[in-house]
Length: 79
Image (cartoon, rainbow, N blue to C red; front, top):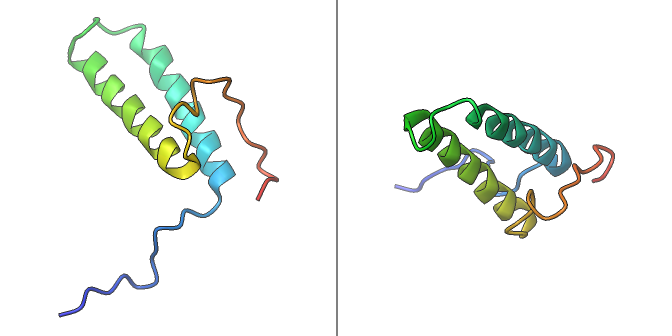
């Protein structure tokens, strides 16, 4: 039995908007991690999500350090 994707592919549309949202969320998570107990459950959960955001940004951009090496959110007009 063949698996159908119903038109879904591995292409992410509107990359600039996605990267901007990821950058904003990453920043908020890092800021929130300041208020949690170091190395406690919340700290580890926040760290895991930040690493997942970094992994998705790496997949989309091909740059492993996209958010850490002079990050500047892309213009939403870039396509």
